[in-house]
Image 1 (spheres, rainbow, N blue to C red):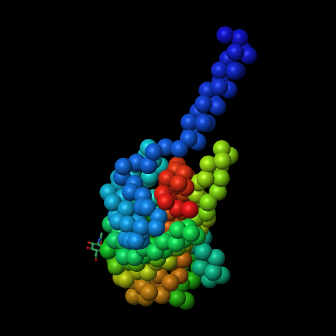
Image 2: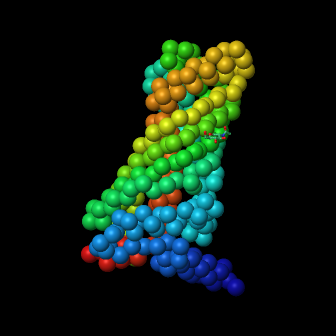
Image 3: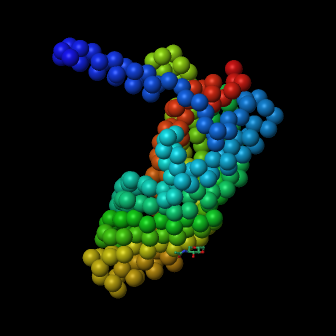
Length: 252
Ligand SMILES: *[C@@H]1O[C@H](CO)[C@@H](O)[C@H](O)[C@H]1NC(C)=O
């Protein structure tokens, strides 16, 4: 083959590959879409999320669905209250797939979704770096972090938006994913505080756990942000494979 012929073949292959990637695919059997306008639409959506649970647990790579066990969070961004800098990386969350759907409210006209969930128990570990003050105690160090949180609730607000892709096909994207969480009870441990200074480390860990609610108020916004970003990506990756008409059959 001449160089030109080779280049042509490559261009054709690229075009075919791109078209292939853009073409609509069928809704998989495990994703139960609901008929817009049906009387129990919210209940139907709640049921389809429930039906999705076993698939979320193990993940379905062909459909960009990651495994929720464990849920991996890249980074919990640095909080910038002036008194405390805390950062966590390589965070693994176990138990996230055991969520229970409590309430679903969907506005199909505005593509607004509200989902309330309950999480009986999650276990978290990762690496932390902290510097500052918490409840007036100095806290500094880096190392492994572990936490066990029970009776958690999550309230998600999700905003979608319709758009036309370059082929004129109507699709949706997720423009906002906000999750507010509350933790019923739990504990947390930061290993190797103050370069492994055990006495001081124990003092701080005890203080954290004796004032768990106060500590969680500082810490939860980071977790909420990390979880919201992670779930926004997951939701976006799933919906972008389908057209608006496929996801919302019967919608005007
Ligand atoms: C986490 O908490 C739950 C509920 O209190 C408990 O059943 C479980 O054993 C705890 N796990 C660890 C590793 O402490």
